Length: 85
Image (cartoon, rainbow, N blue to C red; front, top):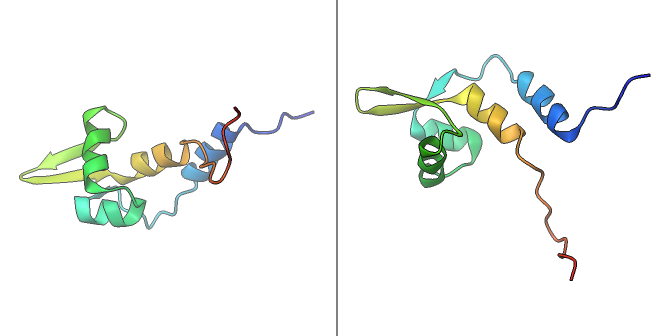
């Protein structure tokens, strides 16, 4: 008898199947287009160590595969649900 995957494990499994066409590193403009995460939020996540990047000259290159794996592991949005009183 097998246990069903937890939500986090399922998210990580989806992230692991990222298409091989996804670049390993991307500049900030490309990263924001790929992820939907703003430039400001990206720098905050980099500063807290939640995302990884490399510096090449003046450019910051975000580790795309790590970033998308991190993004997939985030909890699902609960839009329209009211908090219990």
